[in-house]
Length: 309
Image (cartoon, rainbow, N blue to C red):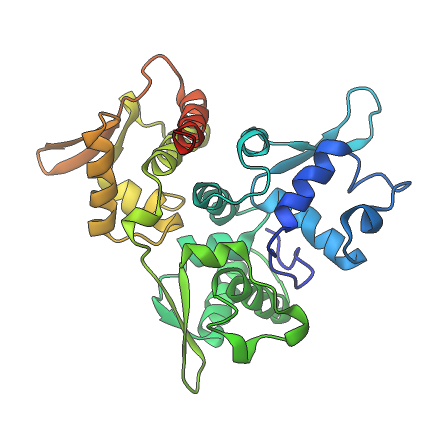
């Protein structure tokens, strides 16, 4: 599990676009000690470390040994390659939802984000509420992380999802740059003496249906890797809503919003909601000749293709 990899910096507008451009130009931008990434990226040393972390945390990049140089290089993930081709400035809402799904399910590298969306069940909460529950989760998993790291992660989660304008009194003027993930509207600042926050259910029209379908195929792909494969691409509706790393958890959905999105997908013949013997399942059959991984990529490609129509 990893905490505080962000160097206290939330994702800032234009950062991911800047990182995508830099990685495309030079895969050694974050790892080659002979380079000057601060000059190339136009940000400070700690921000470079933070951007390197965020690129991996949201699933845009991976780091591997180069085949020729044998040096560690930063390369685009499958999703990163698609976003580079279609939305290199990360301007489309669908891109942000795809990255949100990767970030919120990244238990190993963005543990607090995973915990916030999958394990933390309070709808309304304070900083102390979150930190106390995360402390128990970490300890129960055999960790011994300092409480200050959890507090730092909470501030970064708030900085990621809460609009700086809504939370202006809590924001350092030197760090007053909006995060693109605030557009998703997943967390709101309520105020009050305890400085309360709440998780927000996004409107269904904010989530592109093909992006949602891609996340369902991603669920199938990950389930196969985790040893509980969904046979015939049939996912119990309860899993979509309540299972850890399910679309419902990752996107803060209630069952009404979830069914509205599935109804739209059903009207387009991408899925069918099957109700038998009290067990509701969602059958995926958009591209029968492709496996889960290829279907995921196809959904994402189709989403960007439809944007151009």
